[in-house]
Image (tube, rainbow, N blue to C red):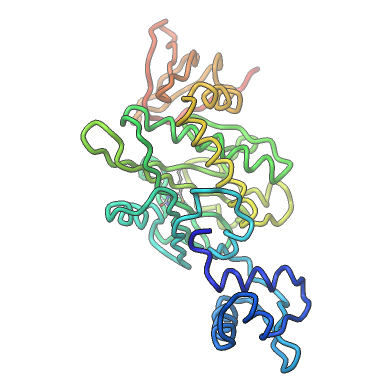
Length: 331
Ligand code: BTN
């Protein structure tokens, strides 16, 4: 397994022991590392917030683990082959994980590389908005992907990510989610997650895509009060429970990988059908804000490229590439 360090292995042993003692000697033998290396890794885990008791002649035992998105935590339950298997760059705080991922991709970082932060000081949303990113409450993640697709096909990855994220949230919680075009994930009428995709092209091919995913997981209502663009909520607020961010992240990476390989091997058709089923947008009356101008009409299609097709009240068809959609409530 790539990038599975001695510290990861040690943590796995401590966790599997479920609070029982493990001797330093056994750990050293099983992991094929020196006793000094065991002790150094224990120190490093303690600095990360793991409470590990050490007693002479008994060894070590894990008393408590912090709620952090540490690479070692993520990898322990991860069931993927690419995403999360390359380097995971972890920050307690950064400006924007998309910025970090872009720099890494410019220097050639491999597909599957992840950037994760516990908080962002300048998290970016679509259309220049701010993504509120308070510490230890949400998931702020950027992934590097390098698909052999044309730039025109790139929006398919954003729609695909929305499907993967919806599936992951629904399978980890009892919530019914809905996609709001192009890539907002809603519970009821409130937004719990969003996706910001940025790409670099080389001639007529995608060089890389940065897929940025923000999820309000255990974010309290007071932290979301500053969100101006639309009503926001968190999974915790909707379920009334604390949700494991690591479990949700692992579930999402798995879903993402499955859908990604499906897209590359079998095309976008099946994924678009899933997206449409989750968005339930076709046939709906809507108003769309396109760069400050409002248009009303009926949504008649979402094309393979993610373009929204609306029949305006005049009967004329309009293709919308970017905008804010508000569905009219059925009377
Ligand atoms: C949106 O709905 O407007 C998109 C929000 C995307 C937010 C995520 S958080 C991780 C990544 N880094 C950023 O700066 N933005 C994305």
